[in-house]
Length: 537
Image 1 (cartoon, one colour):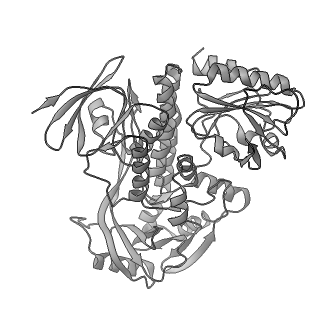
Image 2 (tube, helix red, strand yellow):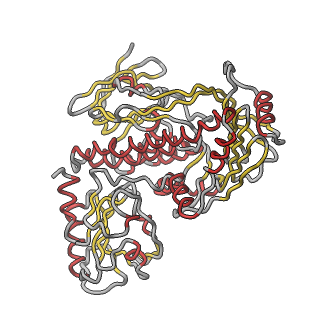
Image 3 (spheres, one colour):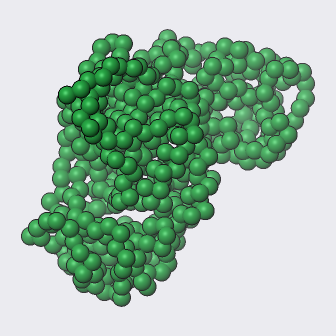
């Protein structure tokens, strides 16, 4: 065994799939010295993840890599429900309030290719065929032992380590963190195929049958991912062949869906698990290393992407010495409840397809009624499905000095976009300023806040916090005395001020992951938040 010496970086990311790549990109973009290793020889061409929800698309748009997905992906706009061979429901989903009003199917391998290319642009390469085999830490650093495919081992030091290394995470095992939960008693098959006669292509199909269920998920490129539980007693050994899948589809769908061009055929089992904790000292878990669940509804990859975006800016500020210990602790406080809810929701969605053969007529009728939603209930469901309603309001990082302001943009919730703005004579919208790498502070001059006062306070905030905060003075038009070194954001139709309840003046602070951190009607109150939350009082 050969052991090479150490060379330190700020963060070592273990795992080079979607979560690890997103984390490394967000860190590198913020100037963090990052290294990323992955045990596989390259991007896996086959995966269960197929769908990017609206929130993930917004985060990818922040990185400038969502246009390709928008142009070549397949939007998901509805569903068809069949019971015992008969269509009983067809829905067309209303758009959600987002730059991406619908989720888009785009294969995980392609998403990872875009992220890896972005990472290379930032000067970081994924070190493939490299595994984590040892881990020790103290109060100042993490000592990792890495092993390459040629057997060479390297002892390596990093300020922090993040395990994004999947459901069988070496990081989690080396830390001794439990992964409690349950496994479905059913084995499943998965087929990535082309299917004939399956219009509309922007809808997913759900077949409930006395033998079992089928899901026809959408894939880009005119393909379908077909998933279903196997009948009891099936061995689920080796791999299915196309003839077996075709026979299952024929029996359960009652339709004429000719399958061809199988790109991937496999068996798998579903686990529902959440790690006991997301952090041990200077080591963190993210993505499938921290949570696994049913692939139905397509939330696994998206939850990992959001883990990465939540953690990246917190690690960055910790490395720069800006943040308190509470900032790092907030990662688990914010993200673990989200994972637990995703696990519960996907299990609730998956299990009816497993138990449908044993349902009574009344239970089947109740199941069908559960798909009928209208009005506000439907919009709330759509926002939840697109992961736009995540609420960090209970987080120690959320502070509200003006709870009478609009509740849908309170601290802990994602910002709502507003268009029709001007910056440096260019048209823009609010989301152009959010998403990192820095916090964004908007100081609003208004009826009770003179322009000169708001301008001075904007300059003071910029002078104090410019290393991690971008500051803008928001005005309906250029008026009054504006300091020369303040950045002005014009809101000519007052849409931004009205949307955020700032007609009288005040401020909003947004986190680098696009969530509201703090708001106040006073433009001189930012120091309270920084002292109490960022610096730990």
